[in-house]
Image (cartoon, rainbow, N blue to C red; front, side, top):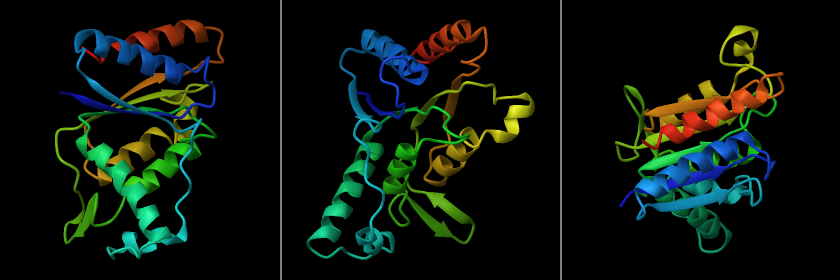
Length: 201
């Protein structure tokens, strides 16, 4: 059975292009594979806390002490477990201030742990997640950042590719709904939604 992990991050619950792309993809997946297991986290509605000092023992490979240390480590372990067991990771990531939403950064901080999801070797960092996973990033922006003058300001796609690659996620596909504030924004949105749905095939 396929398991899909979905991370919503848009603050706009009703008119978000990244949420619309995610839903279009999931609808087609459900239609073609009724037994698919989907785990969804709305990180905008229910954000994860930023890492507290109690996580430090786990970050350094030490066993956490009972109490707050163990509780924080257990949350991180649970999120990593979802990631390890999922075949596809779908990330809805609107471009906020030229980068990822802080809610997504908090999730990344919980799942990127030395000795747990990556390790340092003589050849450099090595991802420890099971191979074969696919990552779909559905991102939306008011302007155009995939090319032209705005490309230098895109700190979302390059960052996600780097940080996900660190833990072994290299099969990453990006669908952009960009130029949402331009006159042809509605048409661009529909094309992006169709492109996102097509990835389910």
